Length: 164
Ligand SMILES: [Mg+2]
Image (cartoon, rainbow, N blue to C red; front, side, top):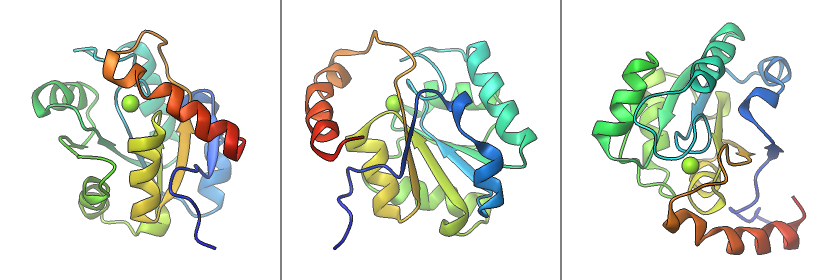
């Protein structure tokens, strides 16, 4: 049976908890990640130290990196440039197109990519639809913008049902 596209392959509390050595040993080489509430609190205009720490750790472990965000290009693009990482903005997740663009930019294969994100209905769906490893990260900041907060009870239902 085909896997439900709302189910992540793994779940971690923070990007800093992800066992990058293990992923590297399994052949993963590229880390694609969401911006808001995955590598930084929601809707910042400058990256906090946490974001720099995450990027540094990914690079230290030998991963190519690319941000894939649904956010407007000026805000997400500025954060990406301050972090010195490539980015796909206006990615329109859950469509997988933004992920495919990132894969092309990094010149890797889908089998080498991992996607990290905090939302089931956008991030996890997009990663699963693109056919790459999907990792759900618990939101960095509980204070979220209203349209994200509205989706959380529905996410909870899915998580209860599929137990992750
Ligand atoms: Mg997010």
